[in-house]
Amino acid sequence: MNLYPAWLRHLLRLFFKLLYHQFAWSYDWVAATVSLGSWKKWVTSVIPFLDAQKILELGHGPGHLQAELLRQGRFCVGIDASPQMSRLASRNLTRQGLSPRLVTALGQQLPFPSGSFECLAATFPTEYIADPATLAEIHRVLTDGGKAVILLLAWITGKSPLHRALSWLYRFTGQTFEWDDRYLAPLRNAGFQPHSEVVSAENSTLLVIVLEKIPVQFPQNSPKLL
Image (cartoon, rainbow, N blue to C red; front, side, top):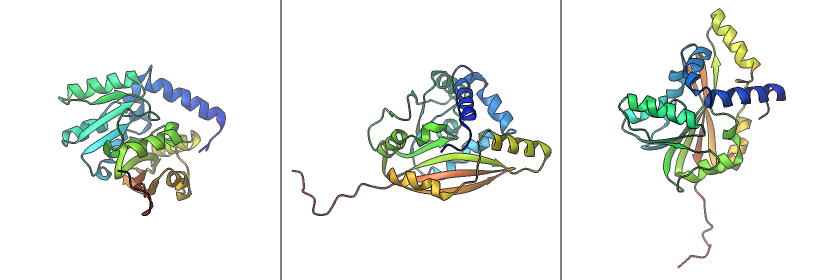
């Protein structure tokens, strides 16, 4: 969805690429700054939607969601395209006495067998999440009836001058917009039953997209294989 000018889109793409790779060490500081300290709470807000034991996280970042899921005894795997971010997350999890399961890979080429996970999570993903190849891979690795939980957007709703300034910055950079469920149509075409959920948080509102995998239905009169 091209919701803001091409020049700004290219600039933001470069910024996120640097933040996820060469400057991964600064990710937590930047995220905390632009969210006024709410970033970790935003990321972990998807946990109530992840009602399963086998979970895959796309774009695990520094590993905050991984840490919470591992503490709950879940079997979770994280993937990220950035080797720098994978090393950072591995260090963070190990320091907390947790055993990370992290893989460096692309969302468009998930290195897992079909039906490997009951749930998939992605928090504030970049443009790759809308790539048809990514959606096809998400559909493939989920079990029938499994679901993907995508934390897509955050709106700043606080009334202080700082909150208002941050809200304007989000709008200016295209990090938020007027949501319409019509945007879910491509997700239906990808084999999901999608719906949106609005989550209230302190001084903010979050938009979560839940994609339930629709099992492939074969005609009743289709020939049986011996």
